[in-house]
Length: 373
Image (cartoon, rainbow, N blue to C red; front, side):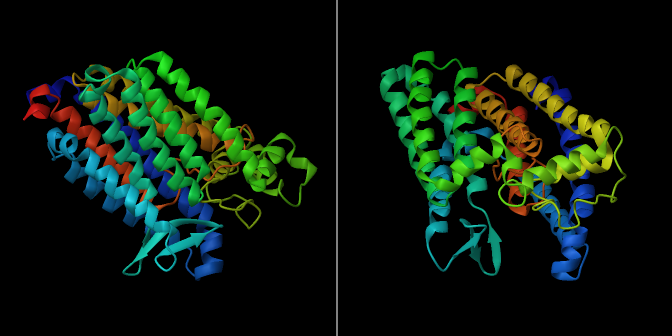
């Protein structure tokens, strides 16, 4: 506990930033979903109530995780990854999986639906951190260590692509690459990773016509304004309508069934419409501050395990936020990636807060001895 005071300022800053994002999320999940919820469920508060429940459950998970010693995460990281990969694989089994928008990403058990691939995020980061802590790239040949890690990432990618979830596959691969780069992994192996991944990504895009259509829509959404380009055009209309200060909270016009997925993938568009450029800049600023304090915390930690996991988590959040905002503003092809801590999604909120709890635990028990015993 004596070591914790060295990092408390960064941890408290991160807690404050996450709290602000969660509050903004509750406000705009209600604002963006109220019309849709009233029409579909005859209850304007349907989604925001579920969001608040998810936040409460996530905070409880975070409190629990921050009490767990780092050595437990270190010891059981491979098991956690194996279990979460198996759960994600079960989404491909008819009868217990639930298909939404053409993707089988949800499991339905005892009347509850959840997205197990969200658990893959902390599980993969824990495994990657334990991998680096054990220094496999030093005790064995570099190529062997690289091959073992690449095989694990390949298995996870195949499972995700079968759902299909191309967006999460790309996000996790980039997160792993950024984390390895930050942890001084051999550049020649990172180059080999990129050299093998880029052609594969191109093949995967060309293999599915809808992915190629997304690329074409990204390049020229006005070529099909009432079809494939409709969503991004409506997103740009929402953002443009906001101006400098917005039309006012709960005053969005695009949420009246013009903009699809307005409370999930395109919530940033509603935020920009209602609180304008200034409010959007504030939101983006929160993510920038999250990255700053998160990286500073990672650099101050003393074990490779704690550093790797913390940097990986910060990279994941920053990357998801960047992709979501880039999609909403027409700077990237459409991907089913929500805005971290803001977009509606109980599984996502719970898993993000759970992972944040692990970061706090690692800051509290940041001693090499805790991993050795």
